Image 1 (cartoon, rainbow, N blue to C red):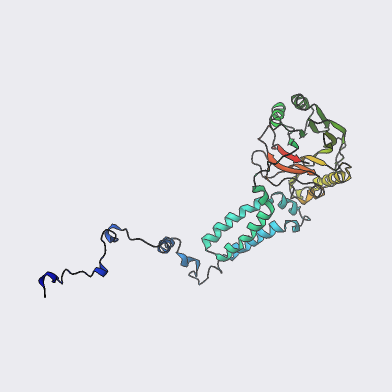
Image 2: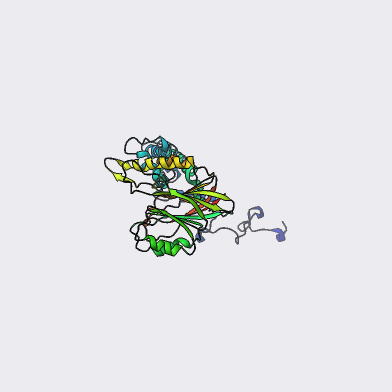
Length: 369
């Protein structure tokens, strides 16, 4: 054999299996490349999670479709309460109205049940959780949308100013900051009324007061009269409603200001809304008899638009869904019981204003005809 072609077998390397050491992973450096799947499997084996097999059978032989049935049942119950809240009877303690007053807050059960479902590694509970999510979004998803900034014709404000308000003038100035065309005030008292009237007079030359409710307007007012919404058994000095005609360049609008009876929660009545409901029936009848087509209602109705007790009113008038605009109590608002509703007009946006000296937050709205 030609010595020039001789190869030492101890050092010979097959070229087909040669590896470039500059690109080869080195175990001592810990740089071996793992696939995404292997990385995910490694994460799934973190102590306490039990890996993906934790979603399979547990020590008792139950699968992810068998565990968490209680959580799944609770998810179904929440979904039923949301979707069928009007089926909850009012006969005992007016539980239906109580539920509807705080209905949006049922959504807080969803993240709680989600956490329970994950901790239990329950596939059936996770699947059931879709039911209350869909039900809640169907009812209140509109409130999560941004406010409607489309053109509008009027800005209105309603506020329960509280009969214990120590700063009437400051409250009036705060309401004027959004430059409303109509300002409705309820729970006015004789000592505080001059302060409100004097502060608002320069911007709102037209106003009307009946009992403890008042309306201040940039628009001329006509045909002002008391609104009879007094429930049975209440004294004749109880005057908490008015009706006026606002003159606009496009025609007359009926404006109602109302303060329905307060609610009482306790035994034996439960959710004590009987007088409120009776007053709502009278208010609904007045709106139904209104000869003007376009109607605006402002005031403290002591109920949410979901509360069936306000059905005689909300069946005829609507509001915006772009914001929850909770108004009571001012320190930690949980419900919007102060309302701005309209007929033959669109409430394009409703929102809560900053706190004043009242236990309610003011509510503002934009209206398009």
